Image (cartoon, rainbow, N blue to C red):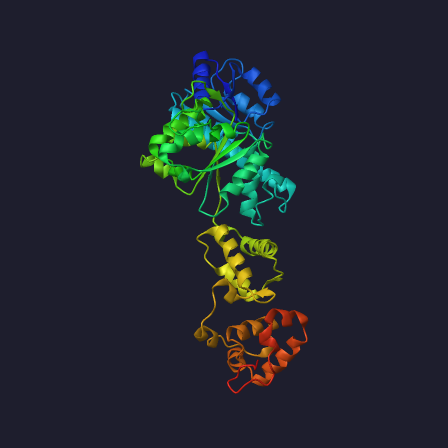
Length: 470
């Protein structure tokens, strides 16, 4: 994040600059007059400008009015001692993000900067999405399969925020693809060639936290026969992904915060301090704002982790993605298991689309893979998905005529009745003779012979119980 502070009072300039750097924002410029501020804003791409109103020669309102048209994606925050409603309204109309009256609470100032930075990334991302076209996904996020407009806008936003190298917090339900998003942000960031170290915070015992994250030297404790490079050192020059960060015990949060602030640490048992350049991406399915209110998560740590925030919606809210992902997972499962299943019957796809996915994308992938393993023909049918209809529900589904029932429906009902032609005809609302003629047509089609296998190839006359003879 790149910030410019404009104020004619030196004390205000230096105090705000120190505060921002203490909060982890390193790229902070200062300027004590409006004319110089105009020159810098036009020459450089600042993310945020903190602007005082009362300055000699050129005041803050003139700077805002003159600079905003040239830098539409730079967010201006008025920071002044003038508590004046007309001035506030005018500043907002000219494009200011917010108007804060001095003295400003430090947490409020930082929260306002954070939200302004998020809006800048969102607006720029949406603009990029419109320029590139609705069908394009940023190359770094090519592993995310989607055609949902909401997801495409989210990826465009993540692409913009990734370039800053600042910490990113990813939230969303389990199975939505938070680690996949984190890898995309890493690839779109300033050091894609660096390491990507993924850590499940839940899996780290409290007693092993320091040695796992910071490493240890030989002889640091009983059994330490050699040195160990901790996660931060392993991720130096790249990205450290902290999954399930909300599960980090409260007592350990201060240790993590210290390293994030100082970018340095000493391995367990070591005397030498190591400096690291690591981007931290964290993820959780927990509401961290609520956890902070309840005293379970440190607010200052949340500020450190949440320079940008990406929330991944659940699968049910991703328009059109269930069908698209199902086909993708089918292709992957075919390759993994050496199968050649061509696709899903319309009824099977309907089952997939209507199903509730508490495990989101991860659950859908498992459902499709299980169906591939269970499928005995060339097409996945509803009973392969663990949603096989009962006899009662089948009998309750009578259709008007065989002409309105295509081969897929005939195959679906016949397979679910175990090949019982009388029951099948009754469910379809046709005579057995009409059904026989339809099956004769299907036998001449190599595709349906492969899909239905033995059920379709059984003797045409059948046995007395209505089943085809083997």
